Amino acid sequence: MACTMQAASPGLLHTVSDASFTSETKRRSRAGGVFYLGDSNELGHPISSPAEVISHVIDCALDSAAKTEYIAVHDVTKRAIYARMYSED
Image (cartoon, rainbow, N blue to C red):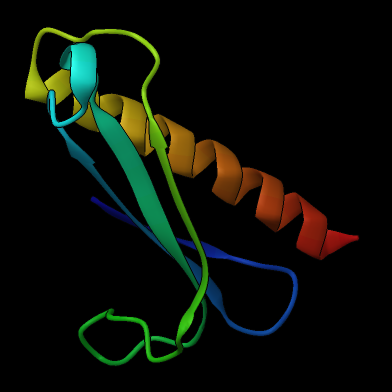
């Protein structure tokens, strides 16, 4: 899933999230995302290099891939909102 936000500094904060269902031991899943800061081309794809990459093992056992993706979107959006607020200071 992708999300784009206007940051206070020039350019856009573009995020992409993904998750893998039960890919870790004890039926744990992994969530992560990539943050781009810069402009986009006419298709909406970021032109710049990644500014930050996050990845972590979700600390609860989920029962569907959809729930795993929701957690990934939540975690990446939460971090993007923090980055956006930080850029406004």
